[in-house]
Amino acid sequence: MGVDPDVRLSSKPRNYKVYGKVNDCAAKCAAETNFTCKGFVWKGPNSGCVLHGKLDLPVVMQNGSQWFLVDLDCKASQPCWWPVKSANIDPTSIKVAKKMVNVNNHNQCQALCLMGVLQPKCRAYALTDDPFYKDGYNCYLYPALNQNLISSAVSGKFVLYHNQCF
Figure (spheres, rainbow, N blue to C red):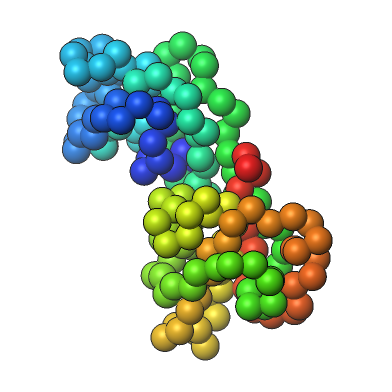
């Protein structure tokens, strides 16, 4: 429970399939003919269903997600959480290359980091819900940060999250 449904779990291109509302995701998996279905992510009957081939990429967790992974071969890696590494920081004080964006919510900031388009190899992000930042940058994307960089951050109104799998 708590899986991010938007994350690819197989390194092989086109080794997944997304369905809208389905009653039985396991049946869709068993009937798949374009690749060998090794697992699926869904929320239960009458919800979306994401089929995956070989599960060889990290399973990324998302706070508040109702999606769960069914790993048919029990071969998926340990789940990756994004724990809080530091609360009340100023994201501009972390002296590494970073990208700044404005997002609507926590999940959008995390998704931008996972996609790695704005910040290649994004492994951490800082986010605030302070209304002062509503029209500016409220999400900062970073590469992997070591403890010295995290400790060097000065006080501010952002929370720093770091992917534990990297």
